[in-house]
View (cartoon, rainbow, N blue to C red):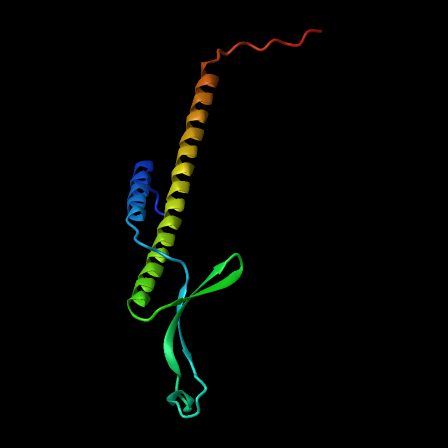
Length: 140
């Protein structure tokens, strides 16, 4: 979200829009899909030729879990496309959730400012309602 000043009502409306978009997220998964090529080791195979990428691609989904890289093999065919879509949905979820947090923080900040302004106004009214009494001189 940009640095434009929005009213609390506009921020609440944006929060509701973000929540609606999050509810509509389909299957998602975290990670990176990597094509891998390998050489089989047979001297007469095409993969043994210089410049040949080898056999493949085979697809690996990698992600970090508690500081360790975990790899899952994704079978060729439709599963590769499904996995790409799931990764895309996760990226979309992450973007929406970041904006949701930002909007909520702005709502909280705006409400805090409103509350501080109301408290300052109440204090000013209390101070204004006190009668002006003459100050007594210190007794000797």
